[in-house]
Image (cartoon, rainbow, N blue to C red; front, side):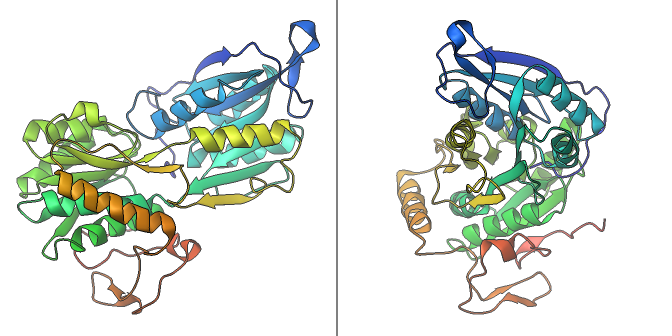
Length: 375
């Protein structure tokens, strides 16, 4: 998830639109009558990258495509929208074009969305991952670290060198939490395993991603995961180097027919669709979406990607069994004792912090190699 501004170089918003033709049976959240007096609801989606990035924006775009199937709903989409005032300009354009519901999907779109929301109290905004709200802006997100724990199990079984790698953009709590979950999952089946982290200081820089991947391979790492917005470069580079890969955000298995293991992916369609239906029905105020809504792996929003050929049937069965336990809540990835890199106990024995506390993670667990960069 993007949480820091992207450079403006070679970035431009591209607007597209699609619509269904059937009527929508509610006045709330609707605009511009179609033929016969039926109401059409226009919904806008902003993406920080291209919809074919095999990552964050692609997952959001796939969710928007599900919304477009709703009767009487028209969607507007903008790709490559910077996390700057440009995002506000794009949202204003969508509102002029009839949008009464807007999904700013990148973390850095939050402040512009709050500004635009204040100017347009009749428009509902739903931000992806935001930690602030307003009278007409809510947020939603998910504990995808729980799926990362499962991908770590796949990596722990697959490694021959006992060296895993993780290419990360920034050391924000969510990325640190994902790294920790990955290492804990791997260590649960392979106590000798370590995870080496490389920070790129960019959400989508193919050059830095390739450099980081090559650096990890040179250190005998043979399974590489990532927390980047665009995932294609890392998966393809790992495949060329003959090492295994674990994806993130969206299914990138087609890029690595030999080395793909699995990945943590977003299935945004159901939650996007339910949010839009709730707004159209005039029931958004006071609903679970009017505030900060979060889901865990028990919800279909968070998925484990299809397994690759490199994962044996026995390992697949083991991961599916663990996934079932996680979804049932009978196990929790972060159950103490858990210590950080310096040996300090961060989670005491028998304790399992709730998701809110885990979202404030500011450390790396024992077994992770690499320092957290100072801001």
